[in-house]
Image 1 (cartoon, helix red, strand yellow):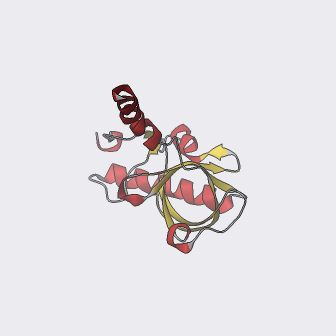
Image 2 (cartoon, rainbow, N blue to C red; image 1 turned 45 degrees about the vertical axis):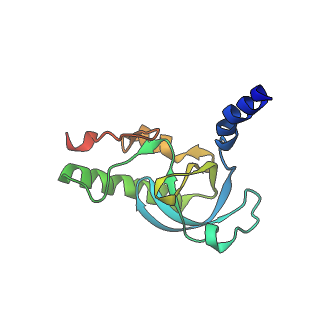
Image 3 (cartoon, rainbow, N blue to C red; image 1 turned 90 degrees about the vertical axis):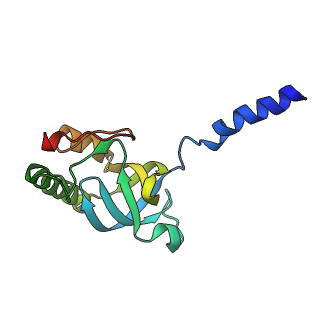
Length: 146
């Protein structure tokens, strides 16, 4: 019996840590804050509506990338932040389909997701364009103000 209890207690954290919470479809981008953060109205993966409390103007953080901050410490970062934001605005605005994959909750209660724009990963696009750096959580680097 002790072993069963020990087994249950050791596996509970693994069960509680789901890989992700599925996917969603962006119906409309409502605002863009910077290169890796925006708000959108969401639907389920097949277009079924989400309740307004979670699907209306939901804050979304692009997973896997960190872009310069609009409220930066130095002018170089502020300029880089404007470029990253313009890149994200252009790609989200011109998209035929925006899909959020591997949804999760991050700090600040935002949704964190791989943002797929017409099948292409926005985070990787930002990195490839030199407008962001890889980010997996934890301590951020700041290459823009060095």
